[in-house]
Image (cartoon, rainbow, N blue to C red; front, side):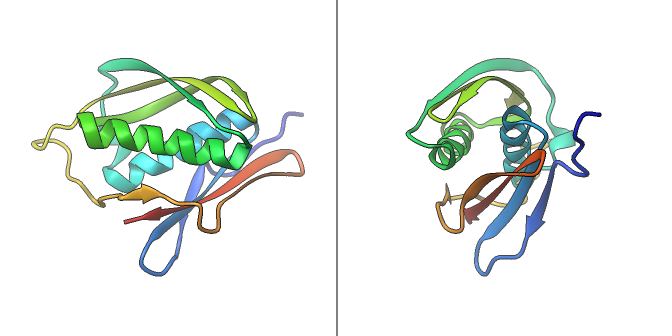
Length: 143
C-alpha cells in the first residue's frame, strides 16, 4: 500500500513571522505542497486561475537550501511580475537541483485580496527531512 499524507501543509505559530509545515509522500509532492502553502499565505489559492504555465529551475548545494531557493524563486516571480501560482508539478528533483512546471496568473486587484506580504523565505528553524515513509519540511517566512 502506498504511503499517504493526511494534509498537504499546516500553518504554525511563530512570533512576528509566519511559518508552515509541508508534507508529502515524495520529495516532489513535498516541494509542491510547500509552494502551495507559500501562495496560500498571500491570497486564497482557490482564487488563482491557471492562465499561464512556466518552467522554474533552481540549483542549490543541499536539500534545505533547495527548499529556500525554490520558494524564494517563486516569491521573486510574485514580487517582480505579480505572478500568483496555484499548481506546481515538480518534474525533476535531487539534493542540488529542481525543475518544475508551475501554473497561475497575474495578480488582479479586483479579484485577489492580498492577505499577507512576504519579505523573504528564511533559514530560521528550517528543515527538510524524511519521516518513516513520508517527507516533512518546516519553513518560516519573514512578513
